[in-house]
Length: 422
Image (cartoon, rainbow, N blue to C red; front, side):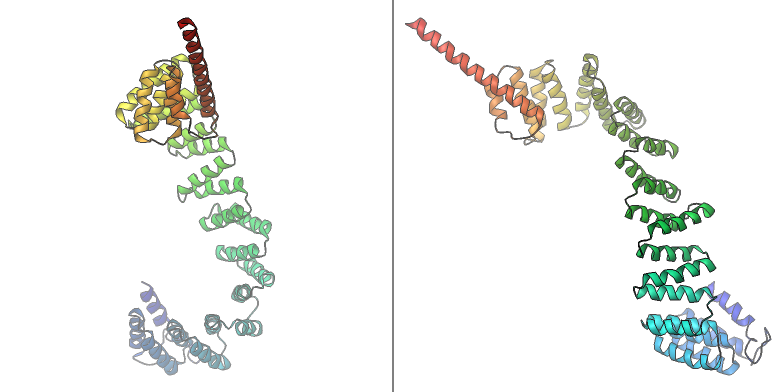
């Protein structure tokens, strides 16, 4: 499509030249055939042959459009020094903005930054945005960010396009002028809503400034382009404690209910978390949500009625999944609430078969034997556990005291037995 368009343009202007300005008039009969050959060569990647054809056409017709195409093809061949040389020779005789631009690009490719800068300052019309964009680019490459900034601002003032804005903001960031960069971006957004690249740039700045609240707000705006930004916003709202914003975000944009469940869990609203978990279970029949529901109702209310429901639920779940967590949770409740320590020990032993080194499960087992008044066994199980966990340390203390009391009782009984024997 691009080549057809170029063909149309070239055929339209075959009559245009310095000597013959009439549009549509051919300079010689086979001019169209040469144009087509050059375009076909370009389309097949044979830029060397295409360049030869365009140079021939230029010499034959004096039409600048062919000389520009000739330089373009040399540029494609990365013959930058030849482009510079040919452009300089041409510009001595005729001034042409497009030829000058190609020359500047070739100088930049050769990293001849000062030569390009001097050429711009000497020859280019300063009312043209190309001058300002190239000067800001060159000065940025040279690390002269403050000088580059002035040219970038002028360029944006002359031509307030999105790309010029982004270039300006990049230079502002290099100069650590974040407030000014934010002001430019927000002014643009007020007029054009949330453009993807502009919002992304603003998000980058807020991230640099650790302004996570505004960063999350920008991610919400970016969510219309990609749902992942809603999740990034949600994550930041959670990290900075904006839980209500997180809840509003989930509800407004119909995000997965699982996120809502975890937000409620995070802020300790276990009854609400339980309702969401049960709703998810009813929708999906996934047992993990029923387990979540069971955990939440236990955290929300530790009344006897609730504990009985929790135990009933855990027994049902334990038949569905082989989970050491479930076995231990169920076993510990049976033990700790003095409902059925013997049965509780059996469930804890199942958990330990799957995770024999888990100190929480080891503690549960010791606690079970403690509840059965078998302190010697309990102490043997728990004595080598070293941890900062307050519950385990408390259990260990009680078991050791029980063991000592049992030893004293045994000694006392032995003395009494000896006296009786005498």
